[in-house]
Image (cartoon, rainbow, N blue to C red; front, top):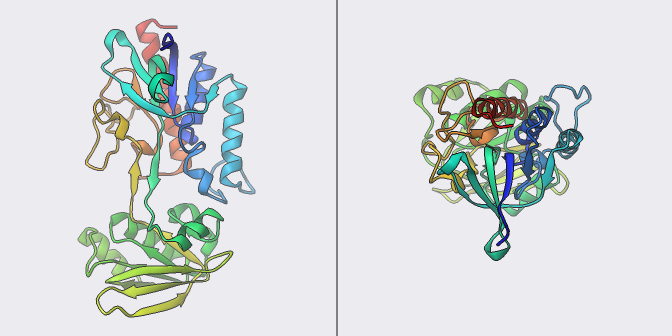
Length: 321
């Protein structure tokens, strides 16, 4: 195996948080190396239109926005690489964090003074062929009401989910849409009583219990949905133009489980509130791998800035240049 590569700042992940961290780290002469991971560009690569990120008055599609961020990071000489992190050792012996890219004899070992984790979170989907096909072509399937709800003003939509986040998204959509039909798989929600009471009090939210999606209808865009009552077995169809899935996200943090403090859902816990510090010295979080509340591109970018600044200060305190 070759001699380990020594670097000052390793960034794992390439969404808005990772590229923003790279921009700040590069401008601070930290010579960052960024590995893009399994989904270069993160969740925004699945988003057709982004209208709520500052600086794009006419909006921008997700992939174009990520190309812009990558180009900006490269402008300041960020070393952007393809590759998948397969193993880490954050025991921090000698202040060094060890990371492996690839597997077996071909694995590339890196020794980093600082690591910024920007691995994000992956939305959970129902797994229906029709759902994923329409999602992939930008045909009206979304996992983010705040991101995409604006496009369905005065229209009828369906939202699938039963937790607090689903209730929040249903409430948000109800302000914009003509009608929100909420599919709950069981005979009751798992959301808090306060959130349940909130959605029940909104006139244009129709809650369907014991309901499962059979198929999202439409060729080039959502036109309706076929659903089944899982008690009676009866199937029905309704006409809609938007289909929202709010059954949760899974943070991409399993590889760090041995070293980093995480909550019961796998989100990295902030060691010092208001900072990007983790419980491991020299390892920092940014973006949706730790943020389970906002989950927006702009907040992810902001935390990328925080992580780079905290990493810079950490190196300065250690006298590392």
